Image 1 (tube, rainbow, N blue to C red):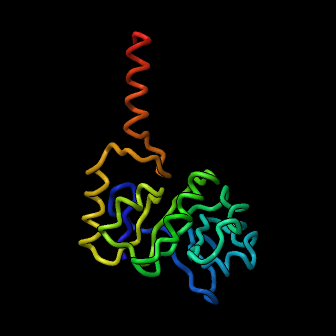
Image 2: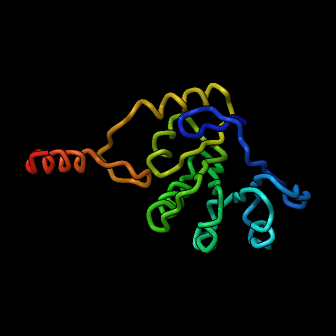
Image 3: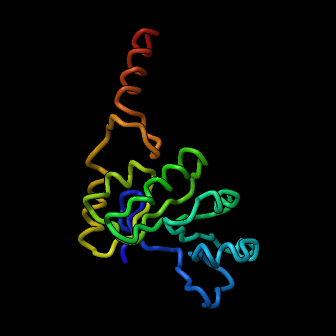
Length: 171
């Protein structure tokens, strides 16, 4: 599957490892939440980044103690109608200040891409090359938003306030 990250189609350097499969001795891996929580310290002891696939029906509080050491958190959209991963993304970015890769996986659809960006996702596992190309273009399409969200951008209001402040200060 293509990966869109930073507005570009890129190779995925994080290798997904199935439950029960042997872990490679080094390199970046992406494991299930169940496998990760069995023995996180053994995973962190390896050479390479560790990422976790976090299901949308599991509380993110369980992953919070490990956020500073995780290279990626992949949140799952099992169907396009199930938006619980949006809430998880906002919690991770805004409440828990997670700054690592936040990946959308599963039913990642192009008409929801802007909302995923705004929720704080910065990497997208998509099923089709055409969707990956559309996603890469969407990143460039919008530069100003009215609503504050998990992606860290200033809102239109905050931009105006900064401009007024700098004008009144004579800057």
